[in-house]
Image (cartoon, rainbow over all chains, first blue to last red; front, top):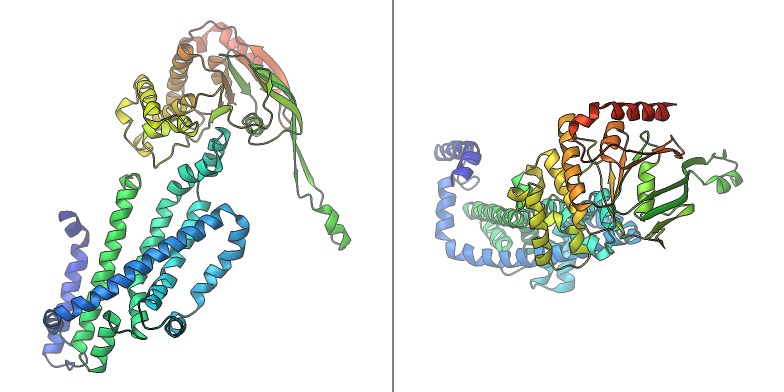
Length: 251
Length: 263
């Protein structure tokens, strides 16, 4: 992957440098291992507990994928209604914004009271975190479509449906994908927060258990997995964007 | 034939005076913008007619009325004797901005009009391909618009306009953003296409030379509110080549138009 290397070699080199400093500081005994484990210990713990980590990760991935898809569906439906009916936009847009000012940490326990300890409350946390950037970016995308293009189609006698399908949707795609990228980076975090508050499986559970038993290296291990997962989801969205909008990336 | 009878259009801005006065606030004077005043003109089938006038004199309003995007206060628009005032779908138009969809290839852009009419995409593509070759755009049919030069984009936009299969093509300063050299190339190119297919064209411009070089007839509009000030038949022989621009007749006509425009 020469392109990736060319793009990220500086970041990789700097990270490697930081990791070396970190390793040396811990190995010299300046910071005790139970407070800050050395990178080598973190790697070792990831390898040692890989079976367990895998199992917990799968649960988290399931929650992220389902919650994210739900958020995409909800975001599209909301944005389309807001795009077609100005009154709906006027009524709902402030509410969509308000929904984001509610602290997740306060709502998540309520979801657990209402929906139990199953997967549903975690999905809802992921959805609540993700639908906002998706909805807003799509609404903005619809609004930013060139009005002259719409007038041209109207003059040619196009129906509202044709205008929506041939102009509004493709025109809003770049903005929509920008929103998806923001949403997907929050999604894993949302699932982990949901799990913290009450679950039997998932990276959030693994993390709290490791923390309670002072397995600091395992806490770091789960952080690494969460980061890798988030990057993987981000990469996936990016890949889909490139497939769906080749014209956008050729510029 | 397109006939326009006594079109009049006035815009009103800030018309909230009535409610405001009850509350003791200063009454706002509504801004009245008479834009078109009793415009009548005709374009025969296969004719190339230009509307020449100063910028901001309501030419674009006239286009919006003909294309049915807006309704006139008074007057009627007839196409082949049928009243089409306020109806959409009879014309296709082209602006200075090419309005090509960045997410569609050149070929897909060109079939837009046929697609809207419900013509199967395969058939539409075939039809567009033959013309793309003639427009020297065949090599770009699968490319996206952003790789094309300004002149090529306007050619593609014109092809899309033509392929929309409408009775009238409205061209609103289509070459206004091009450099002088490309613009004069586009004029000769447009003439060659027009003399082959004879589409009915109504062309808006504020460029006297452009209007004279291209048109069969020219209507000169006045500044706001626009009235038809003068109409002129351009008797220059066709096909016209670039050297006609410096011929005695051409310069005489140009003098006349300059005088009318700036009187």
